[in-house]
Length: 480
Image (cartoon, rainbow, N blue to C red; front, top):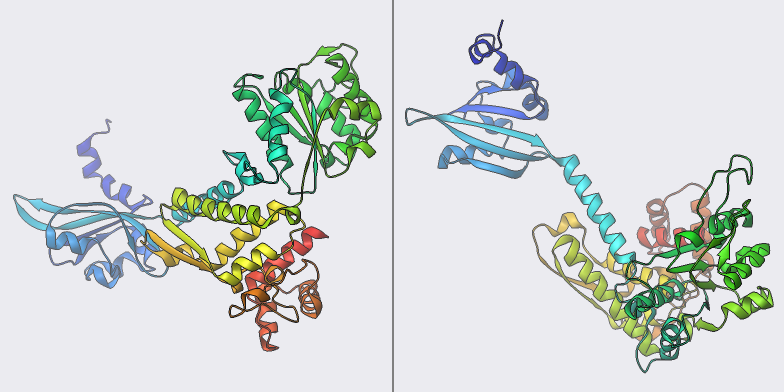
């Protein structure tokens, strides 16, 4: 027997198909009375097909698009409609005519909450990546400005690869978060600009301190041959991967007793994989970075070969107020640009004078990176939630002192800063918060979350929003 259209119709296959599809289907007569609903539609409104048929559609779907079609007798395609609670449907509805007589309408719809939630999560991830990403113009994040305190470092960084006798290996030192990786990227980009390396040359980065064992770090950097150790396979090292470009060794002091291999690679232009005997030629510019003084850690010969250009990045507290203000404006602009790029919302951010003073005067042990994160967190706290913005495409955000994490703004100290006295926003030392901080840590160790801790403190007359407690606990955990 052949499967034909007549066979499908005579055997009620069309109804079977509608009953088993994931989309909801409703059919109503010209008065809006339901004459057919499929199983999915009945499940959406927690009812049964028998209960729904013969009753007005608005009893089950108060915002039914079909009601609009009844009035206009025009089809509507792919419109989002809200139903009960948080349900969200994508719906299309069509009029039914026979011989120019309007008989009714039908709708096909599906629940798109999960898709919308997934899209929102993707947007949030995109926003975080955008805010935390490396700058297209890396001078912005480090704060290089002609005439600024870092201008000499900017010039030296370019000379490492742009001088007539170059390119040279170099060393970058500075506290965590001062911008060592950014400076290495600046050197890389400049080297491509002046043609010292090819436009497609690699920039290979490794944090040598990420490995608990220096032997593992050495195998990552120099590669390994099969049989070098139990279960080992032939593997290219980062030197080979960086050939023709730049190899950035962050926290290079962790190389420990493999300094000899690094020195031989620099002097000979060749490496040997761990467990191998065959020399492999390499052509790599090395940038070594560390939070330590490498002169005290490296072999004298190795230090001498790398330190032809040594650059030290000052901590944020050593920077001028003018540069801090520049960075503050930069991070605010980047937040605004991110909101525009991800959500198509024009966001204008401003700070009260007290909030500005608190941000500029606070101490940041993790330097520019922490400064950026605190600014982003404060703007987050001052901004409405996405679900509260609705269809607005313009947004004004005012960051006040209460939006700044309390260990930065001074809240929880004996003399907290206030909006009425901007100069009171004295720098708080992250990690020293008195009895309030001890109580927060104690409650957290008892298994209580930020919201419960906030309520307990409120009962004691201490006003600490839960998000500031969450920020403090996150950073305190990181510091440990």
